[in-house]
Each structure stands twice: as structure tokens, then as C-alpha cells.
Length: 220
Image 1 (cartoon, rainbow, N blue to C red):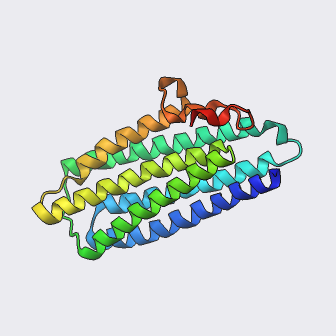
Image 2: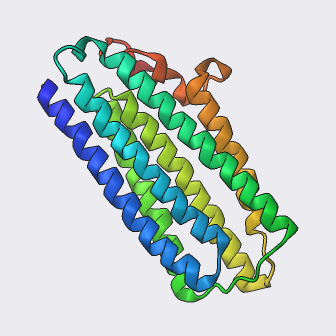
Image 3: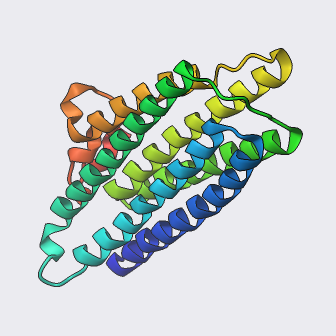
């Protein structure tokens, strides 16, 4: 049972890395062609997310080490905090980029292929988030649950990019920087909730619990 759980977590980590890498490649290409800072930033964000995938794998490998096996909860908690710091760092980066773009806006050129890629990015991230959170809850893995929540935040970033692109295409008004700024503040808040779960009764609160404890799943 334990080996099956471990294999599931590691496989989820590899899937997380692969999908985010592919999203980064496509979004970088589209961001370059459309001269869209929002899409390019989303691509860089996806590359940053790949780090979380490596953390998932490393954490699980360490947790299965004979001498470290009894410290699984501590290892998962430390990994969750590292992921939270990544969320906060990315949020701050987007805040800075958004403010710069508000002060000095750049000309963008959204096309139909650009819109399609952004829609595909939204759908892919949402499905990945659902998979990570569902799998995490099923096998009581705090790391997968945290990564799923992070990916869901990434989905909202892509939604913001999509909405701003559609508004620009229809009304020729560029509001992407303002939307990105608002969402980046939410991202930072979520990251802080991972580190300080007592700040809120949000669903991240159960990250403090022992995944092997009988009452772990009752807060879901």
C-alpha cells in the first residue's frame, strides 16, 4: 500500500513537470508572437511551477528513505512551505511586472491562434489542478494537495489573461495589467495561508494535519 502511494505521488510529480514545461513552451512562443507580457509572464510562471514538481518527487524519495521514513509529515510540511514561498515569490514578481506595464504600457497584438492557446492553457491547468487535489486527498498527500491548489491559482492567472485578451480584441482596451495585479495579490495571500494556516479557515488549513491520522480527510 505504501509503495503504491509513493509511486502515485512520484508519477504525479513527473506529470506536473511535463505539463508545465509544455505549457511554458507554447505560451512563450505565443507571447513572443503577440508581444504580450501577460502571456509571456504566464509562461515563465509555468516554468517556475516545474520546481514544485521536482519538490514533490524529492520529498517523496526522502520520505521513503529508511532513516527518514518516520519524518514523512515533517518533510511534507517543509516541502509545502517551500511551495508556498514559490507562490509568494511569483505573486510578487507579477505585482512588479503589472505595475511597470501600467506605468509604461506596451502594444499588444492578440490573434485567434493566441486566444485558442490561452483557452487550451486554462483548460489544461484546471484539469491538472483537479487531478492533483483529488489524488492528494485520496492518498492523503499534503504535498499533492498543495500543488493542486497552486495549479488552480495558475488557472486563474490564465483566465485573467484570456479575459483581458478578449476585451482587447472586442473593445481595443488593454486591462491585462490591472487584472494581473489583482490576481497576483490573491496569489500572495494564498501563499501566506499555506505558511500561516491559522490566518484563515480556508481549505488549506488541513495541511497542518498528519496525512496518516484517522481524521485527516474529515475537513475536505
